Image (cartoon, rainbow, N blue to C red; front, side):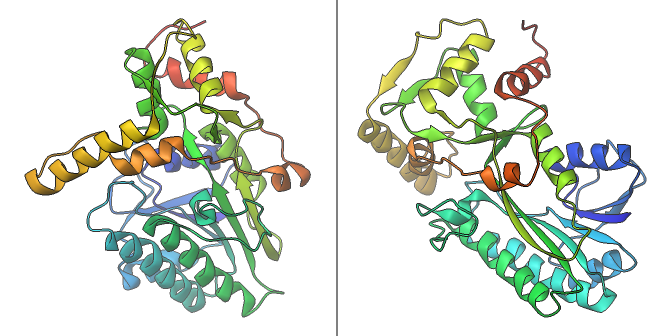
Length: 320
């Protein structure tokens, strides 16, 4: 297929682009940043630019919409809507103009907030500006689909925390903290954390390519889900550290420190790795139900240990 991948220059996009090339697809990357790993595929542009996106979508068989503002410390917060919602609206306009009927949208598990994490569940109540922007993007694409449901195909993936070689997000910070023996486990450690190795997310994307008409929404997470205590023990084991050597601090203490960092950041223009929002995110129970995808026949090619092994090896270390 002739595929346009928006936002393909980043971490997930690089892994996905490689797999799409290997599967024989003709790929074009629409991004404001060059994809250095795949020269010659770039269609430079920004999803906030409606005209540029229309030109890029024209003639495509499928659009994979990955481009998003996703960092958890974006200032101002209006940037989430400016990129994620406006970008989705521009994509719908481009799809209509070019008569493209196949779309795969990367959404996020953040759309669930603290409600049910079942794809068909009624309690989709995002609690963050990012989650709200991703749900709004979903609704725009679903409205597009519903206008011609017998002719159009829409797949929506809601991945949890994604990690792997080349990632620089929260999972990378967790691994680095464990490796430097600086990790402080906040709270009891019994809160469940769903994670997803990037190789499994890419495999789920290939499994779910929007070829047949219809709408499907799939959560993406590696099973079984792990609580924070089990996850950090697994990381320490893979790093050959004592799995029981861990500092712990009550959640209220960590929140106080995080709030102080937030105040200093606002008043002094400083940046800190710790914030109240990150403490809350660390302690939250983010167990994602992914049975729908597996019931459809998907089988993840990597387990937790294999995903961590590949991730740690990419950091230039030797691990068993």
